[in-house]
Length: 368
Image 1 (cartoon, rainbow, N blue to C red):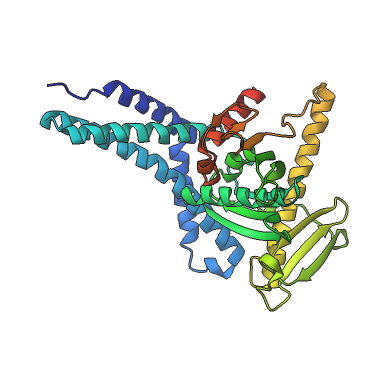
Image 2: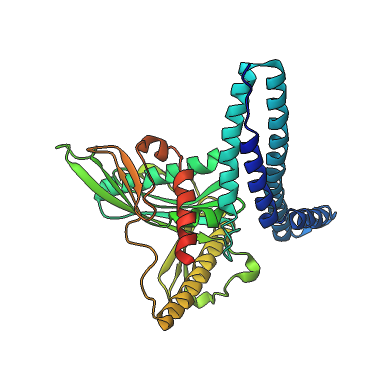
């Protein structure tokens, strides 16, 4: 009787997995977890809340990263046992189970392999993502809200902690802008390839004539900096406004002026936060985002100067990086990588991994 022979595929997976372990540095990861665990076990840790949050967050990130590695190792071992048992008993159901697990492991290792390409200075950091409606009127505001839901669904599917810091609702439908934080290992490196201009083409639900409408939204991604790296911002460089948090249609969701808007006067950068219950917490969160944007802006200016001195002034990112077409045909296409799918509804429901993986690989090739 025919037996299931996937030994060659399993051997290839083990070889890829060994390379990933080497790049990730499992021994270093385990040493960092041991050190952070010791710090987290200090009795008076929570006397300093900020330090405690940093330690516990770093520990959680490292443990999550190590858990992914050890889980793959265990599943590879179990797969070989499953194949052996299935062949001994000539069990077709077990064969199907083994083949399904093989495909799942190939996908998981593919994701981990892509992560090894994230070796930028800030790639391991949490990410702060801002979405802004662009040209296109009401359709653009609705599109911006669709993108917000898309990214939050993606984070949810990966069990990443995502916190909406601020939302500015449009008058008729959708949002003018929204800012959210994704607190997960390599969140910035992963989501940074989503930065740029996104375009939507569809039959407008807001147009009584049912005409096709093109609208745009901008996505900005910055790494969340640690306070030790934060830029010092003089008080006279900022204007702080407080206001009441509000939801769709202007309905008040807070009875006190707890929401905070900070304007950085020299650059014009504006950051708002209304997620927390107190004004003090919202101001602290808004300052962290402002400092992150200013630090990233500084690094971008330095990089631009270096490119100009070297004679390369061509931008790496075009004005439009991805198109979502709902009419007259169905397609989502990344214009940098040429990666495309024909099921926009799945993409808007958070199925972004293919686009993100292709973007990371494209960026790596572009830099080399």
